[in-house]
Length: 259
Ligand SMILES: O=C1O[C@H](COP(=O)(O)O)[C@@H](O)[C@H](O)[C@H]1O
Image 1 (cartoon, rainbow, N blue to C red):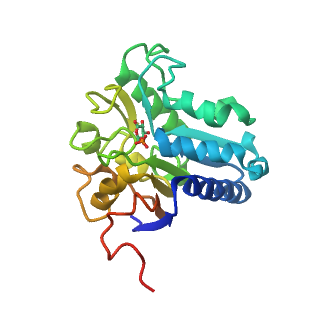
Image 2 (image 1 turned 180 degrees about the vertical axis):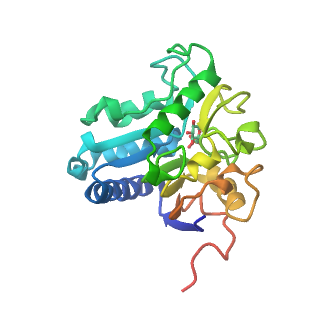
Image 3 (image 1 turned 60 degrees about the horizontal axis):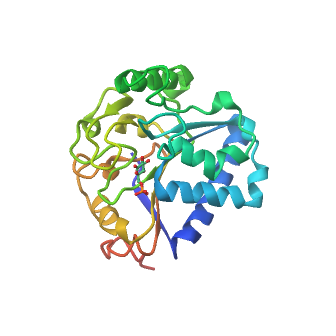
């Protein structure tokens, strides 16, 4: 477990641009040292803002997009192409404008896909895809993602792990179907906390005043069942990327930093 580190940007636009630059560097470093990079994308406003910033960065062309694996932390279980699906929004923000290898874009199934409306089968299939991508060096059923990003919801949810729902209590499976999510749509697919913790680096994104309470709770010692964001950490690094509005309720011992 790595203790959270905080980076607070002035506003959400700056946070998106700086985080896009950070992600580009991280992908380049991973490709240089391991040949390819793996990134887990998040849905939501902050995640899509980051992808849009990356799309307009001239440095995006430094990335070898054909040597990048993209995974998702969660997906809204809706028909293919639905505008509310996380992958639809990611395609629009960035993915359709860069030369990715389609075989390395690991989408979670849609509700009209090969598993039909069976969200458990769709979750199991994603778990199997992750397990097939993991090697002996990963010591488990999930690849050691270079960066796994999570948008923090105003209720402290991350991926589709909502406070007190069964998915956040999962300790064995790496991917689960989620029912009864308080944020629409109610049916979703999500990585679990054990899968999230397989990542080398976990980046939690929180921008906007509506995230201030969630950041304060998750960073103040709350339990992960009540505050799922508190249970998200990486093997080597856990980075909270905030804007000043989202940092406005942090306790003074956390922010602002003392000299
Ligand atoms: O529904 C979701 O919400 C969260 C956070 O979204 P935001 O719009 O409040 O930033 C996101 O992390 C998750 O991937 C998504 O499915």
